[in-house]
Length: 391
Ligand SMILES: Nc1nc2c(ncn2[C@@H]2O[C@H](COP(=O)(O)OP(=O)(O)OP(=O)(O)O)[C@@H](O)[C@H]2O)c(=O)[nH]1
Ligand SMILES: [Zn+2]
Image 1 (cartoon, rainbow, N blue to C red):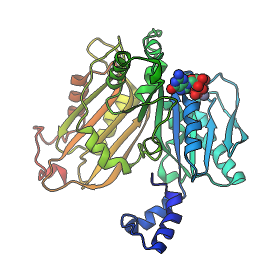
Image 2 (tube, rainbow, N blue to C red; image 1 turned 90 degrees about the vertical axis):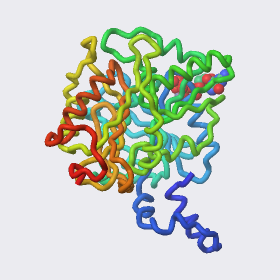
Image 3 (spheres, rainbow, N blue to C red; image 1 turned 30 degrees about the vertical axis):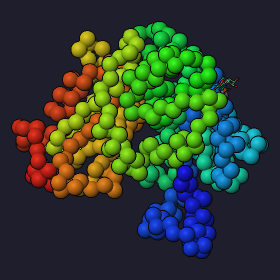
Image 4 (tube, rainbow, N blue to C red; image 1 turned 135 degrees about the horizontal axis):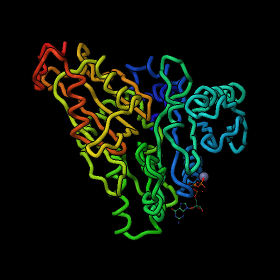
């Protein structure tokens, strides 16, 4: 694990010892700015899945970071004040948050960040923040609170969403019928995960485990799946994932190449849909496409049900941009960010998208994307990388 804060010191020590550390040298500036930013990993999962067990495991395994743990109660009830409990080195601190109108997305977003920043002012900086949500929480709402534009200059950035899944009871939770229009919480937590930890494998047989693995995969085609007992997992697969920033660029692109559109496993369940479109797209019209999909929410599938996109990722080829661009979205928030990777002159320029959500129809989404975002002056969808539309 490369922890920026620790590395700055370690790097100096190593350099003094004469150990070569070639990767770090050219990006020293970047490292310095990073040192100021603290990652937040959201740990979610249904009631009793093993979230606290995971937290405790991380805290006992990880000795060189000052880790703050936040227990999140935001999702519950509508009280106007919520406390934010932060434990650090065994001591528990409490900060109070004021919720202006009980709406999580509108009021906690600034307050939650502020509370953590206040706390750091009082108690000194942390290197890492772990946030455990309550079992029924929507991790998307919690994630939105930490997923702020780099330009806002926050000290904190969202590193990843980890969902702990109970090998024994997950199937039961996932098949629970919800009122029309409502999303099953357990399924939503899997849909949003960057890492899925199937825990308590000691309680099930291989056949049961295999079935669950398939359901998780069919729900979220992008997620990395790890199986554990007592949430014991290699920390490098949980921390410093960079799932929401352009550092994930190269690995995301690699990943997207292997994703396939999935079939719903459970009735009306969440699926992953993916497609690629060659050529270069207009950024302006891309925004129209995304906003129609995520904000207007008027796009229907073949049976007339509204599509509900929970998570969206993509690597895009945008007009007049030599760099590959990453698209990320959680619920209604989205972000386009240039990666350091330049389109190779030999490489075909292609946009690849992955949608995770409910009632998604690949054909309809793909057609809508093509008609909305491709340059209207062209009436063919096949471009070469030398195509004038790209520059
Ligand atoms: N058999 C078995 N039990 C486990 C395993 N991991 C955790 N447990 C137990 O499961 C129970 C719930 O674990 P927690 O870590 O508290 O789960 P949680 O997700 O934090 O629970 P809530 O915060 O209440 O939603 C505890 O009694 C754990 O000891 C496992 O791998 N196998
Ligand atoms: Zn817990």
